[in-house]
Image (cartoon, rainbow, N blue to C red; front, side):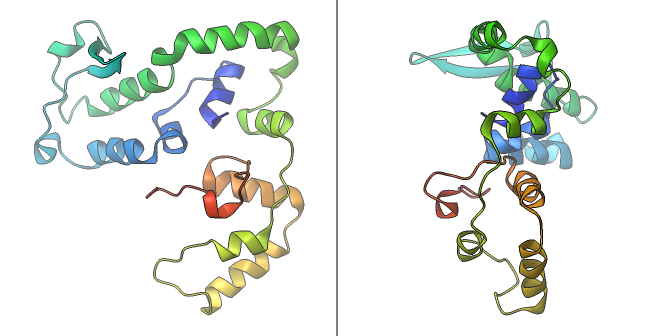
Length: 192
């Protein structure tokens, strides 16, 4: 599951930042909308979203009459929130509700309400065994090399962490505490 799906299980609202773990490129585009002027981006955006269902393009209004409401610098944060909510919640609502119906038959919501999304992920997925040698071998450095003192310090600190601290580090850096089955070489970064 993604971090946002654990939020759905707990009934916690998703935010546009949750999109980063699902689709890093789409998230990067949302951040660009927020950081640049709409005019500068030269995009003709409205409060609507297009999706392809069985080969047919469908336009969905994110707010009432959304396809008639232009996105501008004054409302672009609202647009980003709505479009991310649509992609992570509304477009898959039927699947979320079906899953939760079955899940809550087994685990009542009250029993898991004490957890936050990261804790629930660890409860369901377990604590990963993190192979730091594999992580180090598959780390790509930008502006640094493996011999730089800062990189050496980083790995020394990481090796001194407890198992739980390493899992939290993995959660922080990748958005999930899970390791790909094939190891860190198969972990997708922001550039794919």
